[in-house]
Image (cartoon, rainbow, N blue to C red; front, side):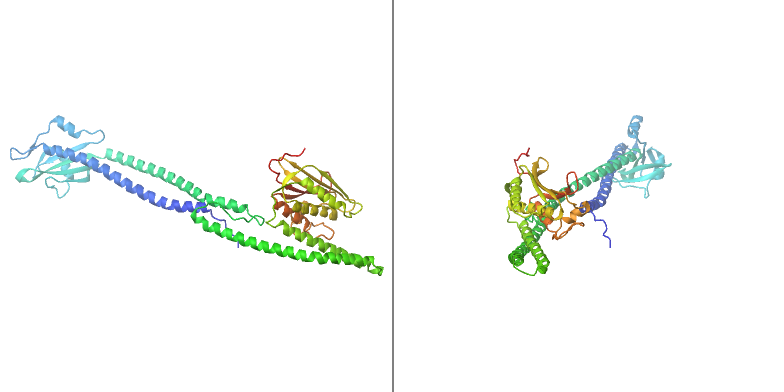
Length: 465
């Protein structure tokens, strides 16, 4: 069953932070709007009540009957408003109009009387106009309480409501955007240690299983400890495997060498010539087995973490030693082995690199074929660091087969001979152990293969001329 696309942890965290934000902010906005609206309404109602109190103060009870006399100037002052129309009405205890707009009596709430000293508010409709009304009771003697009504249209209230709505909406949206950005930034910052931990893990492989030492938040410490325990178990398992491989190869090498010597001695003794092909085949099988045992030993040493690969060396010296070693061997008569060497300072283990070069030369001798021309080179450059390569003019390896050829016990599709498929794998492992790589390239100017080991240049070294 196909696995679906993985969700982003950052997006999931951001979504869970954004969800309450989308729920809570509108509720807070509504609550804020209601509170501000209520406060503004109360402030405007107090203005109406102040007008009603002013009118109440103008009622004269000295004659026994309530009377009120409002001058034209005071009437204009009471009705003055930049946005709304103001109406007022003063009624005697028995409902007679003492002053003001008699039409307001049509909208007087029921029950009509309001006790002295108390006020009430309401929204009313008068001649298709919405009004805000305050009704105030004023003690008018034994007759009861006079009723004072003050009303105004809703223009400034509607304008204020729109301003409040706009203010709350804009501030709410701005706050939501700022909180969303802050949440996104906080999530990214909170996940930064995971990114650092991932980068540390990317740098680990079977050749580098050192413990993770980054300073992490408390929540990630158990994860780091689990990885370190896993690395420790892998290290122990790899060490056990290397020890077994080295022991097995060492135990095999001695009897195989003795067996090879015995076969060669048998071939020198008087014997029936008809068994010569059999003895030669046996000798070749033993030589191959001994070579395989040596390669297994080299493989185990290449993976040995106790080997110091930070020694200052020169690849030219390693190539010279290999050349001297091959000078004492019996090469096929038609094989030409040459060296083009310059200084190539690097850091590493000379024994391992010599073993890698040995495998590359052996591969070239084994597979380049008749009349092979093999050249060993080394050098260094500013960009490529130090390098060591073996080039031959044989059939080479097809580009599609080259990655497989560097794997253990794998050979190119056109390979001939009796190789085990370990030579290039050992060279690749040794190069990786030194922080470098093995590249299989085309030969210069013709058919063949060029196997190049590239290593980091030694600090402070200059490229050779």
